[in-house]
Length: 514
Image 1 (cartoon, helix red, strand yellow):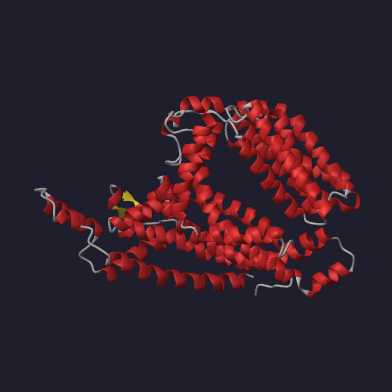
Image 2 (cartoon, rainbow, N blue to C red; image 1 turned 135 degrees about the horizontal axis):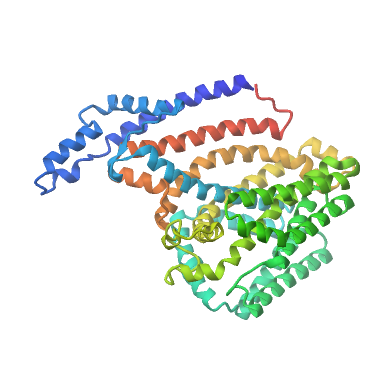
């Protein structure tokens, strides 16, 4: 393993050196950073040009200038990064500009990538299990449509319909009858298609999902929940039941009584902890409160799984930990929604709840409330995250479907079925891990691609991240700024490729990294 990592590290360094040299030369020769000053009527133009030439070392040929930059970049290996200054950002050190922008972009890209993987893989797996069904054909059609959409067009549509018109709807949230009917029929069809089976089973699934959808929309309209949303203990318990059901279905199945008992304990724990957590989150308004809540929920999950597990203690403890960890999300959402009315009073009326500009609301900078800032960040993250997700979900759906279908045709899957294992056990325990091997490679490559794609998304949503830095550097022929962007994206891409190689051996024990 160590030999493999060292070999890949050396190869990575060589790739980065060659790529950085090419990018530096192309950027340095793409324009003249003194162009605006050359045509200026400023009487001090000549002096400013001389000063700028000195600071950027323009008298040195780009070929030699690259090696000076490389010497500063190599200092990052010993904690002394010197990537030069960015004249387009007021002589700000590039390392400082990159640090701020990278944190903003990684916040956006990380969330979008995680959600795209979860949603895309889940949809891809269900279509593979329902191959050549109406559901499979429908998902395939929409996957190709979304995959072919240009990101800037998707972002503009989201600003119009996901923000401007949706904010208008929130001012008077009334669902027309035709919307309720379409949502009921559409989700009912999707539910019956995912479940599959005989006609009777499909009709039962259609009625259950469609009825639940109609009841939910009518509940939202009657209670005007969208006008003043909240969860409370009832909402936290309902979401905990949903989380526990998903974990049990995917891990052990609903026929396992020990898993059901563990899930029941965790749901009861969420209800019992709601009131104490209110004091915790109120008096400890920093990330430490979230860590404490997570430790408590995971600890209860471990204890519950240990005492209910019997001969399957490890499996039940794993179920308890998963449920406990995911149960933290309803508590966080509950705290954010408690600040909903205060948030509406603090943000500008012209912005609306779903923001289309920037990463934060400047007027909230002085507010000392972590949950308020979480709510504000979420409102700003919604649209750019969806824009990045849509394209990625379509790709992950197709890759996951093809990978799972290939694995399901392997001999060991037929052997597992011949031994009498349930279909859930065959898919989740035997096929899923091997099907994830190609996905691991795609995720590694997609990390760099999503950061590159964020250039367009950040422009549309005025998100001050790496994309803004890159475009600003190109326009001003700011070589140091462009190279800082390349250094972050290039290193992330090659590092995640190495991580993908290491994941192969974790997903499939037959693979050995040597």
